[in-house]
Length: 258
Length: 211
Image (cartoon, rainbow over all chains, first blue to last red; front, side, top):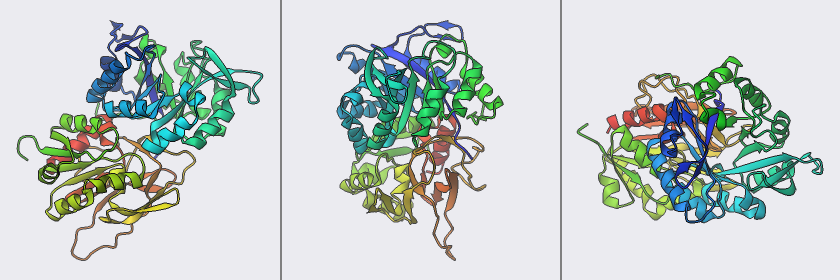
């Protein structure tokens, strides 16, 4: 018995809609995150991630409604990240039906937020979202960024990872800003470097472009692989990714009932 | 079983009970989310969720007289299903971060930290269910969603001459741990059936059929 490597589609949502165009089995830009999450779950997604890219505070209520409606019909774990600043934000999302919460900028600004979330809800709720950029000035060669990779912090990525795990981060969502959008594959060296210092589950993100990219990320140490555009644009299906992983000897979940 | 069995999801302040309510509804139950004593006692089935630390789940339950109400239900043969930390608190004690907390003691044993290179044990895993299991009837070789760092690593109950032995389903992460127990009206799972897709809904339906 061994854990299956999770395959996770990530949806950017704002004001109750999926922001980037999504094409699902011939349907162009369905737009409704609830409907899309349900389709991905049906297609075998092991988990769903919503990244809230809402710019305004007012729209947060819409996000809670989206999460609530998703949790009503999608019976796989749901992670929500983006704009989480306080324990109260986390509480509201969990009450609405989220299982795990991603934190990034607010935790970098105030690391104790991680300890507060883990202390109140358990480490398993607190996903540390790492947007990592190659940075020769950093001791490890990588530093963390905020605001979707636009703002450099100068904080060493490996050092920050170790600190955050010590504070109670229960999982890492490791996104390579360098690889993101390139479709040239995950940043394997980054995954290896973070794996080496981490005893918590690691989700690899950024760079997936073809079926051949997933198994190497797992070999480098990822417990889960996340992708967005390859799924949304219909370039790859969850089933194809799982089949490619299985062919490479990686354990995946396949419901035998279908 | 008549019409839709009435299930109360014990609302004592545990996080994310929303999914449990919706999954039980999808599995065919008429669900109430409450800590109201009459609703807890009178439901056909009581669902006890639990996330976070053992100690905080126990104190949350105690604040609503949970251990007493659960004990009274079981004495009357009325079904109870504990999930995740809701399974753990049914054992004698939990040890988290050096702190020992007394559990409900329905089963002997200690909840302790798992010994594995990566924790939490987070994701979809297989279990070994006994052939005669009713919870897992018709669900073989399916994976369930786990998220926990602690578990019961040893089953220490002595066989009893006249009582039927509880049925134990095992999981493994760095070593074996108790993934589910079926013991007359009392059942529990370490994994989250409400987050385990079609297999999880099937398991909940199986439980509802025992009510």
